[in-house]
Length: 133
Image 1 (spheres, rainbow, N blue to C red):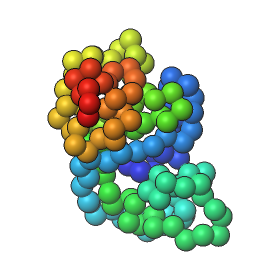
Image 2: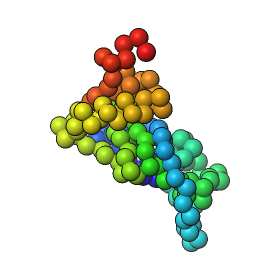
Image 3: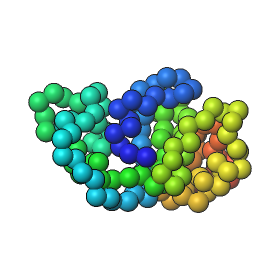
């Protein structure tokens, strides 16, 4: 998963845009950016977490080198979260999600996941397990 994907991904549950990216593990790779027109993103810079302002310089070359190996894509509007595992975003409808797998993901990275996702995230969260957290 790359930051630039936030320029066009919307929540499959409520269609909200843009979504919030919470990186947990990242990797830096060499990427040839010669010949690319910057800013690469047209509407939203996921790396900086802001709308694109034309005429502003953006750190596209740095952004392109960072891959999100593990993380969460989160919709603050409907509170749905989507895991990123091994660089792949699993953006599935609730009926296709696996409850125990999602909860295990939250447990494993709970120290790096915002409290709002742990306690109120949908379709699954750890509210019952973390009472008083």
